[in-house]
Length: 123
Image (cartoon, rainbow, N blue to C red; front, side, top):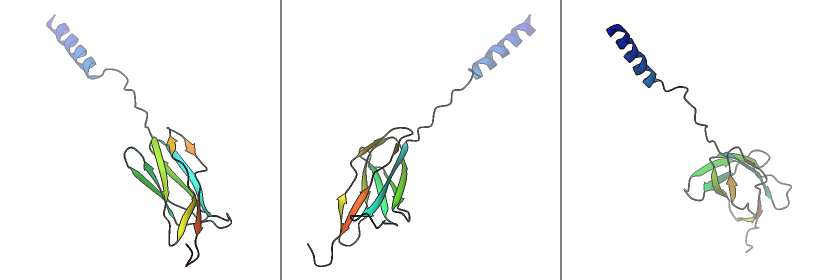
């Protein structure tokens, strides 16, 4: 009888250590924001510029650099983002994307920037 009781206690004790299959939590990765940086006449792509996606609530910043065609993509966690572009010299923005909300798995394309370079001495 003691042997049976000991075996029963071991079986119950080990069952308590393994509650069954462990459910994996889905990884929340967010989505992708994409666009193109170009000049106001749209004929010149603007490569090598930093585009920053800044989460509006936390201030978390994720940067990307435009490629040879002026295009960029930036992967971000779920959230609402404002986009900023590195300007140089006398450049100003003629067009800037509005804030964008990214859900899990989203691809938010068309977040384009258009820059205008003022000639020296012009205001």
